[in-house]
Length: 535
Image 1 (cartoon, rainbow, N blue to C red):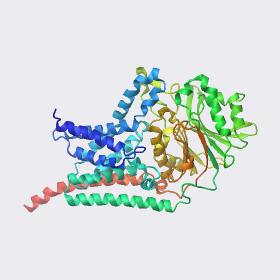
Image 2 (cartoon, one colour):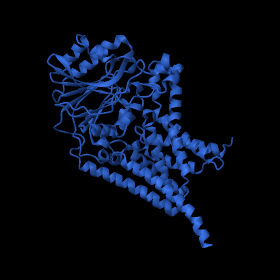
Image 3 (tube, helix red, strand yellow):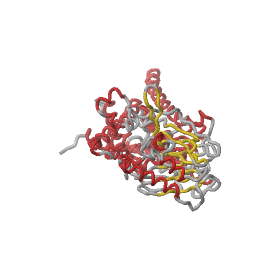
Image 4 (cartoon, rainbow, N blue to C red):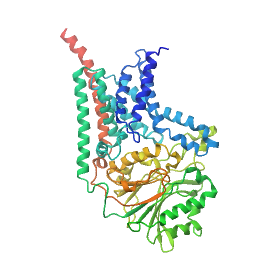
């Protein structure tokens, strides 16, 4: 059967999006980045009869393949309670990929509308993609999972450029560098050589910058001295166990035994339990007189600090309000003292709250929200500055995906963090690629801010990440591992350019794309005028 040219283009778009997705860790097939160049060519060749519709469709199809591979692990969350929600798993993956892919369709549409030709179109294509990805990270609280700029393994040489331009800026650079070689299929040889040469020079410059940054690092990424000793606890508790009331005591016991475990390097100053560690409201298991509170006190040494992810409730006139929070507790004598609290600000759509509640509740989708009417959002982020402890910026679950989140809190409070604490419940996604991707994406926040990150999850991957995005090898607890790791807090680094400038470089890249488009069309308009005057 003969396939039409239109269907060939659509299949190629799917393949190009899949190739770009496979460039991300844990796959790490970086040649797949060339898929962005293929997408650019496909949009250039959009149907002459319906160019805008065709361009949008090809970009959207590439996005569908990209996000289907990048977020297929979402299906695991629906299999936790397979009897109630299992039937939704294939639909969830399909609709999620198709919905997020609309932003890639928008990128293709913007690029097609610009109608820039020649080698300059690479800049316009990269800027259009960057703008669409920024929107993806902000619409409906945003979902900036697997930004193209985060295709590079965090902690690698190229990834260090995020300390200057951030993940959105690195997205523009990555897409532009990957698309430049595609010009050999369309542009004259000389412009194609120049554009590809510039792209190659950018890669070399980024590698060089990363090498210099590592050379100037205050330690080697393996050993650190002087900071407090941090214990990260990973109990390997699957999500379905939390719904079994008979497992409650066993779950608590796991956390307690791991917390008590003697350490080779002395008594940890700080112990970190993951998001939603104990499957009950904090007001219940931390209430005075409960056996759980007494057991936690007994598991801690005097003066030891526990950071624990909790679900908690506040009573209000309109009804109870639930929060996904991180509590900072210290054992003082024979009891616990709360030193600080952080309430999650960025909530997960459909997991922690329901967008468009009045429209979607009648469809039964509200049943997917974990608690009651969902969680309430906490105030805008701010670090916890507690005397005697490092200044800490908590990031709960997917808050670690957002470039600038920690910077925003530091600027608002005037307190720069010494440590990012990322507690997450990646048990929802089982032994899939999702938790591995999450570790890589979260590590970019350490690079951007120049601040180390302690990451604790119930099933992995838990680790201490240094200020350059490198996982300290001895601190990594693999997926499905039950263990604790004690690691000295690595130092933060001198203020990064990104911490000072934020997304200003990214904005400049977008302005550059708009300027190229404007100049291109101005010259096209000016050319007929010159020809008429000459005649």
